[in-house]
Length: 160
Image (cartoon, rainbow, N blue to C red; front, side, top):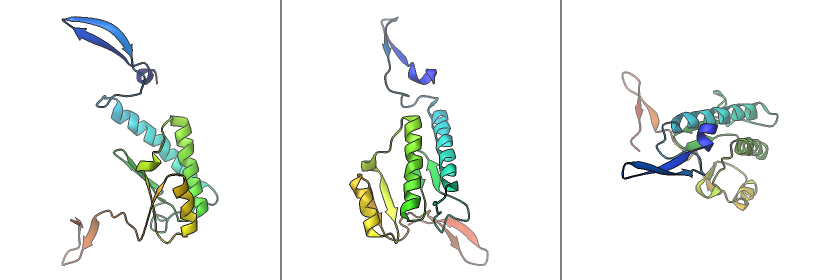
C-alpha cells in the first residue's frame, strides 16, 4: 500500500529537478500499476459477493441460479444480480457496503442504476429515496449474443 499512498512529484526545469510535492489521491490515470490494482480490488469484491451468495435469505435471479452468478466485473463497471426480493437486495447492498468500508471506494448513486423486472413498486421506492435511479421492464440488459439456427448451429453477436 505504500507505493500507492506515498506518491511524490518533482518539477524538472532547465535540466534540474526541484521540489517535492506529495500526491494526495491514489493512482494517476495511466499508471502502470492501475490494472493490477483494479484486479486485486475486484478479487476482494468477488470474494465478498461469493460470501453474500451463501447467506440465508439470499436468492439468485432465476436466469443466474444455475451458474450461481450474482455479479460481473469488467473495465470500470460492475453488474450485480439477485432475485427481486427485499432480503436479497439488502444482502447485496450489505456486501457492497462491506467492500466500500474496507477499500475506501464508494458507489456514486447518481451514476448508478437499479434495473428491475416484476418487482413491487413499493419495494423500489425505498431505493429512490437513497438516490438510486430505477429502471423497470423485462431484462433490459442484453448480452448481444444469440443463437442462429440453420444447417449448422452457430453463435453470433447481435447487431442490435
